[in-house]
Image 1: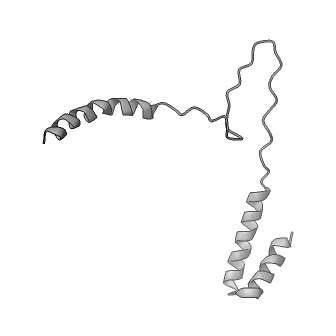
Image 2: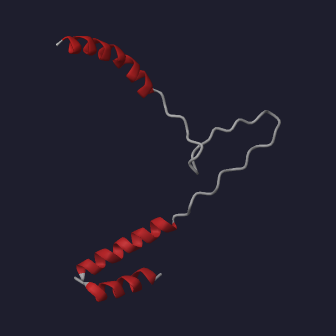
Image 3: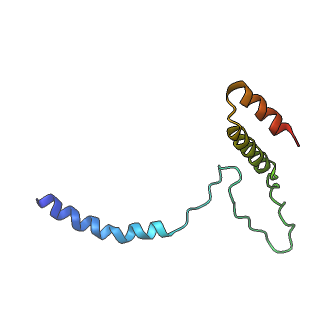
Amino acid sequence: MRFSAVVAPVCLSLLPLAGGFAATPPEPRVDVPGAAVPVSVAPGTAKPAPPAAAPSGDAAAKHAKRTACLKDAKSKKLVGAEKTAFLKTCIAAP
């Protein structure tokens, strides 16, 4: 009984500190490729190179096309090798 009477006030007194840590934003990681790293440029010096171009929407377009082909195959009730062949031709079509 004594232990909990001592521990409870100590834990409750630490609660505001935990809230303060949760409110601060995390610092960006340097070891992660593509992470935002703040760059400071002195006035009168050259600007840093622009970041690499974002990947084009090809992946999104391929995903949308594949999803449409899968729905079409499901509506036609294709299975097995027929479904695989249909998907290959459907996705390859322009």
